Amino acid sequence: MKNKTTHQFMEINGVNIFYRDAGPEDAPVLVLLHGYPASSHMFRNLMRDLSDKYRLIAADYPGYGRSEQPPISEFAYTFDNYASIIEGLLAKLQINQYSLYLMDYGAPVGWRIASKRPENIDTLIVQNGCAYDEGLETFWDPIKAYWKDRNDKVAEAQLRGFHSPDGLKWQYTHGVPTPAVISPDNWEIDLRHLERPENGQIQLDMFYDYRTNPPQYPAWQQYFRDYDPEMLIVYGKNDYIFPVGGAEAYKKDVKNLEYHLFDAGHFALESQGEEIAAVIRDFLDRKVVRKGSKRQSAVTD
Image (cartoon, rainbow, N blue to C red; front, top):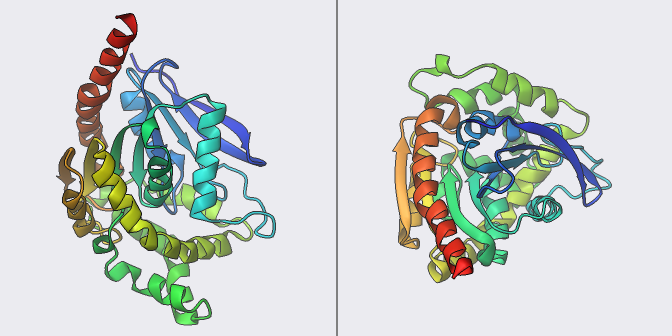
């Protein structure tokens, strides 16, 4: 029996954060970290599909989805701050053991959290998210130019184009064999939030702050080698934003790796959601439920 998703707000670090919560409160937890330019809305179907057996938490970052968008003058839009927001939410919810689902921007947010507190992590699920230079190919050229010079107007115009109406549609439909299966509601919902005052600059600030992630790749890769976490890759193999080379790269450092490619684009859940949910269920059933049973046996003994 599936559990209904609740839609709630909680103040974290002085910011009103919207989050979705589904599944039994005492079930193993999967924390879902969304990407650009989306929100927790991207996980709506996955939460429905897995909530019979798992508790799923998905928050919107500040400036995304339904979370508050503080003025730029009062809030630094950075990956460090987003990781702090998610940590604060989990602390208030009294969740200290969980799996992470890392997608797009959710990857650098999640790697900050996991490498800081590896003892809290049950498993890691990576969907079109990067921790290697191999994952930053042609799409990233204007972003890298922007890192070098924030006054580069050509690069800025290209970056603004990514969250224009046509750019949003492209992100959802590129690489999808049958684009008609992707609901236009996705980019229409994103656009509504992106059109808020200052939000265009917030997106540019986040593109610029992404420059802080590649220098941390070696440390995150060392975390993989030192802790060898249980990791599942579920990747849209036709993704132009984070191409499949970035998925292959995890094989260099993660031994406990299960690897699945899908004939999908960047937002793979929109076209291959049921298939991905089935793979995740099988993975969590083997890696987390069994681990939980062993923990309970140890306590009983």
